[in-house]
Length: 107
Image (tube, rainbow, N blue to C red; front, top):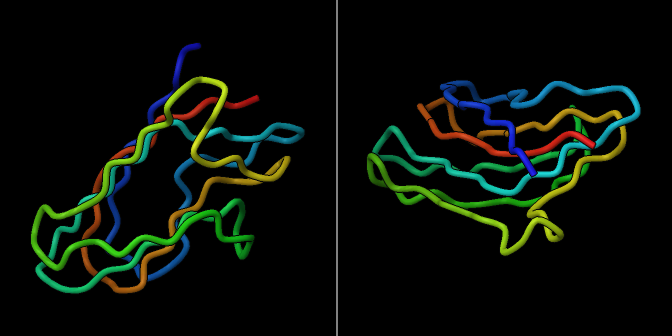
């Protein structure tokens, strides 16, 4: 299995698209790395489409460079799967810098 990679960098307190929707397909996330770029509280949510269902919510440490690293244990067991024809979205609770990347497949 070959994973696609998408960089993430945003200072927006909004829904930020990481992988655009593909008609008739889902995104399966196998690795997620998100780092806080500010020494303040930040919560991020992963969603399966704009204004969609929340797949996971994570509090980032209140230190610059503090973050999360999630990795699937196998290719048969992704961390998250979007709805069919849904985009992969990261929503931030505060308008401070968050960076990282996502590795996924589109099926």
